[in-house]
Length: 388
Image (cartoon, rainbow, N blue to C red):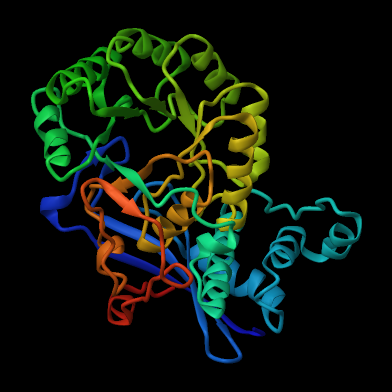
């Protein structure tokens, strides 16, 4: 399992016009991701994803550079099986020997941001490698499945008040028993967001789980006003009500409402999640394996969720690789009960890999294929690889 090569590819694929949508990020016309490939001396390869943005589009050149110029030299010649040790060596840099000897972190300056995103792709690829080497899904390496299958919720919901019901019912017709819609600054006013949520609940009925996601765009007063306006809509959760830079503000919003508050997709490492928990800001924790530090760190967040008796709901908006990373973590975590499934235009979910990811009757079955169970479509990679 000696590592002989580490590669990173920035992929940018156009989203078909009929599947494009407007949000607070504007019109999303492309989907970006960083594909990380780790090769061992026996030719085995593991794959992971690193993100430059939580949404669909983001410039990944810095992540590619970080992986190839900063992290690759740390990894070459090392044993790919020692995932925890390699994580600490990347996180602590030249002071890794102190960290390993003393049992605490001595992090590099890039302990947050794109360096951790780059580490995320590497860490996920290492887990994929180990699962393949042992012939088991990553989930089994994390402790095995807590459930045989889990419900998925359809993630989308950008239509206006007159059309949001039809859009969400279109998701429900595919078998989903939970749906998420976007709100926030894209609506112009808080009252417009409230109107859209009320229209959604009226259209889908009382029995479907309904989530609302503001992408961190409300102010604290606006988020509190929104919560008051939709308190009779039985939201399953209200996601990223305000900027992730203001954890105390998120706690203030949570204290003002009985609606569960969700966040975490914009956070780096379990230390950031700990800080949110210390100020009592969250009911639902949403790590993104392609951002937070890979499967290793997402699982550490899962342990925090279990300890604090909160819900874990990994952010799974990305390529097939970060999706399956989140799925493996969710199935291995007692605190996870539902999985996000993107209904946006996403060629990275379906065309990037040879396997077909399926939701049947709104349910996802526990992973069974070795590693992440995914094989890149190298023709797709070749076509959409960006020149740096």
